[in-house]
Length: 209
Ligand code: T5A
Figure 1 (cartoon, rainbow, N blue to C red):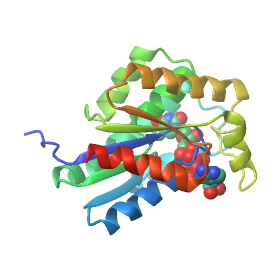
Figure 2: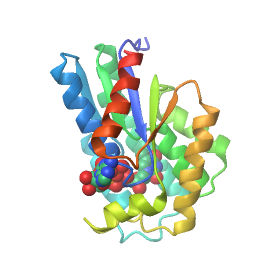
Figure 3: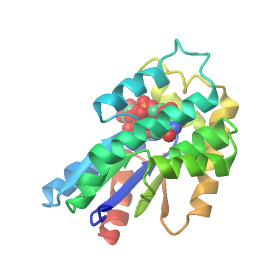
């Protein structure tokens, strides 16, 4: 019998360097302090199998990886993550904060890489076992500001090294997703200082809870 989802599923989306990891961590700490039963997780990865797939996906050695191979690897990592981490946590009534989910696949592999939207949607839905977030926080920021943040601190991975045009298509794609799924998307200005962004996100999440 299919498990019943009773927790709250909140996903965080945006381009690289938009501050998702930082904000998930700040929100997690805040909610734990307030006594909520919460977990923080991220994609791709967060399982033993997913971490191996993550290494293959981000490795700059694999320049020959085709868009479809990339799509299937992200889907495989998600299928494992959903079964091993997300479903059990939701079934236990927890709040799940997830750094990237299905919308990343739509933004990167469809709007970014150019694979047909309905095809990506079908596969992404299958990988997610049809689980849909209750809330998706989109951290909106320009490609220039975001990449300025990350290029100063580390080497770029295989996907980040894609051309500027692709990153602009992904950023624009996210806005289209926010319009298409307006019932669950909330857009936050991620160019503001960390604490300001945190306060805006906390308000949105508290309203939901
Ligand atoms: N991908 C992923 C797909 O193509 N399809 C998919 O289906 C999925 C799931 C994942 C890659 O895979 C792609 C997308 C990615 O290219 P990753 O390493 O997990 O790779 O990449 P990101 O999720 O993008 O992680 P990043 O660390 O690059 O970005 P974050 O988490 O958005 O940013 P964060 O919090 O690490 O912050 C970056 C820097 O900015 C600073 C931080 O201190 C840090 O130094 N910062 C701020 N500076 C100023 N003001 C603020 N408000 C700041 N907030 C953070």
